[in-house]
Image (cartoon, rainbow, N blue to C red; front, side, top):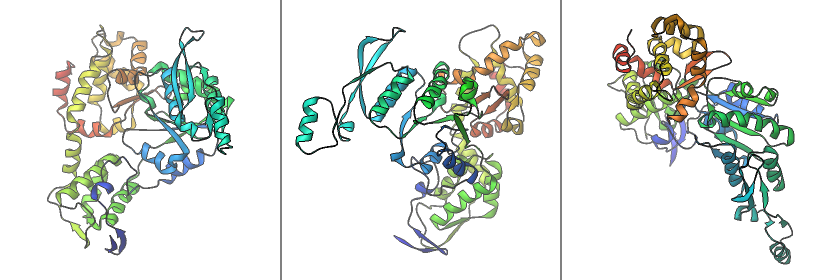
Length: 436
């Protein structure tokens, strides 16, 4: 059902399809020219593309908005995958059936056999000569014979050969790349360089981090072969457009004070803005597009809705602190526990822009039991392993990231920043055994 509501021609929409978190592109999706425009341009450069930013800042929606489903295959990365498992997943999404071979690689790892699947048969591939002849007899002249391919899944050359054999011409999206073990990420940085040199195949890597050149840091040879799109930044004007586009779709209006406060106190989190608007609509009993323009006069301010959104993640944030503090194993220095001190005691504004290595080091020298004798190498090593620790502890989404190039520790979950601002920091420090 459609009609003119509040001066706008709109169709009836469910509130949950407009505001909040959705598996699909939100109906009030806002194009950010410096983000969407850059991604569309970068996709034409025949280079690997990195989409990076904090958690829940629209990276996946950006990818879905700028690419048609037929343009790519999607692989959802897992925290225990090595190069072999990643190649296996890519081949399956491309249309192969994958089996373990009895043959082994020079590193004594098992090879795999990629066979024609039902998906590839629809594209005209036959697995045997008899199938090929039968197809030709039936007038299927596009049939091609494709014998099973034995390959080393850790060898990018073998992956390229297999994909080229079927005329593969799509992007390969690696979603949640940051969850992969550190050694897999490092290995794939070299993997991507070979793929770029050997073929026209392009990868799109989607990851939660705040470092533009993370993959180049892992492999300097990728310089000039990758481009990066920062999906993190949302200006106040863009967040306002998110709210107001939703208003048009639902034929409602939030009061101006509500919108101003929501934008100011969301810390630039589009997720918090979206979810707060959804909760406000539910409180006002707006479940779908209103027949008459409705101004929502709420008896709660925007901050209360933000607090409600963040409070749902409170147990997860508390568990994160405890889990992170325990580190990889018991050690004398307890570096990960003490790394939480400069985070918990920093100003929110400092956490938003990231804490520099020097500030972290100086703070630790003041509070760590070893004082100024604390080895700088221990601090650097612990900071560099922050993503690996979160992956091992199965912390999803990541809360922290360390930019090794710029030596800056950042919070990549903006809800955590808001949650911290509501906590008694002295109590948090005491619970973690971090006395001021």
